[in-house]
Image (cartoon, rainbow, N blue to C red; front, side):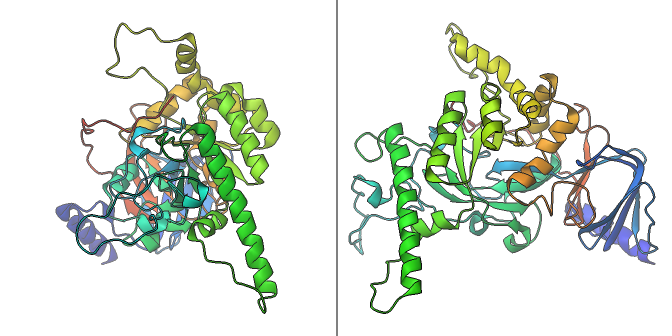
Length: 460
C-alpha cells in the first residue's frame, strides 16, 4: 500500500511539473560509490538519511524496513555543492557576485537600501536629489544592516537552476555598495525563506566601488579610507555602548546607529583581491582593522600563495576565469601581463592547494550554474586533483564560514545535502540525476538556453 501511495505522489509531481518528489522520512541509497570529501571513496556503500539528516554512511550499513531504497549501482554520491559567494535566491539580482577589481559596472550605482540623506521629503512631487557625500559621516554607499536572509525568496528562478547543476547550498550576499550588507548560508530549497537559512550572518560584503570624483569617496584611496573610518567608528560605538550599559545613571546614552550595528554583527569581512598586490594590500588592511577577513577574486593568487599561507588568510576563487571580451577589437593587442593572467589563473587553485591555503570556489557571474563544473575542469587540467576540487566546492567553503560541522561532507549527523550523478562529477558528459536537500529529493529542471543579455562583468 505504501509503495502505491509513493507511486501516486510521484505521478502527480510529474503531471504538475513539480521537480520536488515526496519521499518518506527514511531514504537509503545503497550499492553506490560515495565521495565523502573527508576520506577515500567508498565502493558499494550505503548512505542512510533520516528526517533530513545523514544517519549512517559506509560499506556495511543496515537498512531499516521503513526506508525508501534507491539502488545506486550506476550512481555516484557526493556532498551537495556549495557556491561560496553568490546572489542566488535574491530576486532581480545579477547572476553572480561582484568582481574582485572593485569596479563592477552593474554594482556601481548607489544602493537603494543605503541611508537616506537628511532633510525633509515633500509630500507631493519627486524627492530632491541627494547632495553629494562629503565625508564618512554621511555613510555613502552603505547598507551594512541589510541581511540576505530577509531578501531571499524561495521562488527565485536562480535556485532551481543551481539545484539542477548539483548545488544544494549558497552563501548569498547583497552586493550593492561599499558596505553591501550581511550574507547568509542558505539551502537551495524550502517553501519559505526561514526554512532555507542554515546560518546567518555569514559576513559583511565589501566592494571597492569608486564613485564620482565630485563626492566622497571619489577614489580608491578614498574608499579604503572610508572603510577604515567606519570600522574605527564601530569600535568607538561599541566601547561607548559597553560603558553606558555598565553605568547608565548619569551618562548620556549613545545614539543608535544601524550602519555600525550592521558592521558589528558581521563575523567577518569579505574583501576583493584579484591581483597579488591587492591580496597583499587587503591582508594588511584586515590586520590593521583587527578583523577576520576572507578575500575573494584570487585569479593571481598563484603569486601570493605563500603570503596567504603565512597569514592563514582564506580566499574564495572566482571561477569565471579571465578571458578576452567577446566583443573586443580583434586588432587590439593585449599586454603581456594580461595574457599571462589568462593563461595562469586556472593554476591558482593548484598553487593554493600545494601551499596548504584554505580556499573555496564561487560562481562569479557565470551565465549558468552548470558552467561552474566546466570552469573547475580547467583548474583540474592546470594541476588541481579531483579530490581537491571537490573539497573546494564543498567542505572547504563550509569550513571557511564556520558551518563545517553541519554541511559540506557526507558524515553522520550532518544535514542531508547530497548530489547524485551518473558518473564522475567532473566528467564533461556526466549528468546530475537528482539532489537531496534537507533530505528532500529534487530532480533537475529542463535545461534552458542562457539569455543573450549582457552578463555581470568582473574587472580583471
